[in-house]
Image (tube, rainbow, N blue to C red; front, side, top):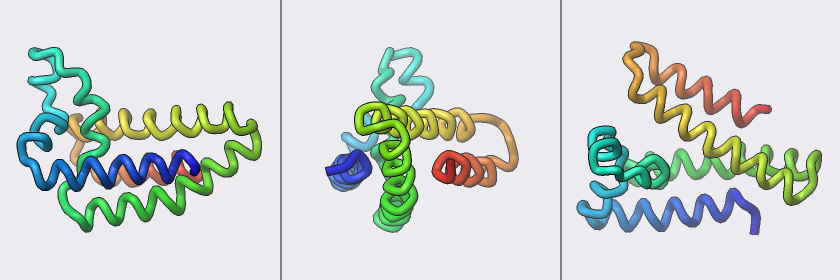
Length: 124
């Protein structure tokens, strides 16, 4: 089983559970105030696995499957299994954290930048 499949499985499982349980969803969402003042730093990662609805989840997982699998395969082919897998995870989480930063910045063109960052990272 490749890394992309594992990420998809974890994301789908957590998203479905969070959409059924509003308290869980609230605990996993990134809320800057709670992250900083309540030391809930797990939210920096947990929000990655939460999606608004089934169409949002489906689109993201299909995109991740096709684009992410290609990138993962190329990285493993070029760097070997262990290093390629590490690079893939590094890129995946770097992309997620960069989107988190962009989402909370004050720019008007945030959605365009998000799309650009996703395309750039997956088309390496």
